[in-house]
Length: 494
Image (cartoon, rainbow, N blue to C red; front, side):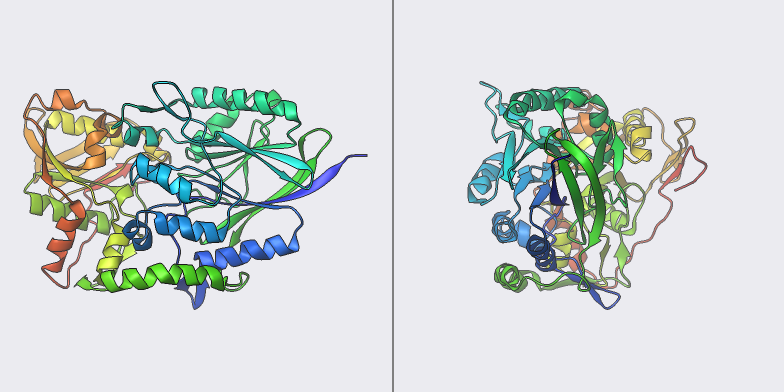
């Protein structure tokens, strides 16, 4: 007869400081108060419960950015996850600050692949075994290579890059710890859903990885993907939902006997509030409200940014604002730096900071028409258009691009109504992160680009520039203009 024990495994990813509930269709949705209420409810109802977070606790809210993640750690301490892995945004406030925040955390943070280059000593524990009801559950933390881009500023910090490297690291850890009778193994990853599937293909079944709980691509699933016998899940973004596994573990054979999984909506219908965590949030909210309640401007209507991989109203607004303020020909606004799906019609300082939380510098550089086409073609590569979590840019007014995925060619590439010549030189504005990682973002080398003219910083804060320009006028508007039109290989046009 099988020796079966039940485990309930709850999981979140990409919380991004989504602390407060919102009203939707006369119903409260999301927020850590009801999220905590649901987790506590399950902990009361079930015997063996573990709550895990797969990266990106930070960034996306005023409460997080104003206190540089210290507020988030205190709120997470109250929420009480059992295990957390790092995401790329955990290093946004600097690696030294992240190590400080880890000391503030009352929960374990794991990561297998960040290390000091001089001696290869890991910066974090690579894994943790949680013992519950006589079961040993092994969690291993794997991070996206995007964090490497941020850490390149510090030559003393390294990380492995490829999925092959990641798979080999998982194998080393599993081989080491399986000897102590681990009953169940979970990868907590932050590499994106498509990469999770590729990673699963590379894992040797003998290593005993039972499931992958992912993050980074903000993928919302209604059922797990299964690759190489390994279920793979994500729970979207924020606190609007939580993933729930109910697993029967075969203790004798150290594997899943059976499981069910579902996304659970966090709303007032099925999630009680946790008043203790509300008190913690309100301490920080009351402070930020005093600073960020000031009205900056008003739009003639609500402007939106529903997706990062096509032209959006907010993308056009911000790209145009920076283009005009900085006096460049073209500003390429990173879609991923716009963190709200909608803004306005009344815009407070807090609204703007939550929508555009990255207070980075703006850089001026010069590209030829050929380099500009090369950069946009790299942005529109199949990997991006097929749904991978890659960089995408909003185009400022004047640049119009029409692209055919099937032929990988431009049907139209105009600036101010004139086809772009390869030898024409354009002044280009970029945010700091994308300037620093130009090779990854645009497949261009800074050394080659600077043969035309040396790049320089033209603003110490993109957000300050946007705030100043927006505050100068009311009743502003932005519309979709067809600046970037993409004919997909499946026949659709976006």
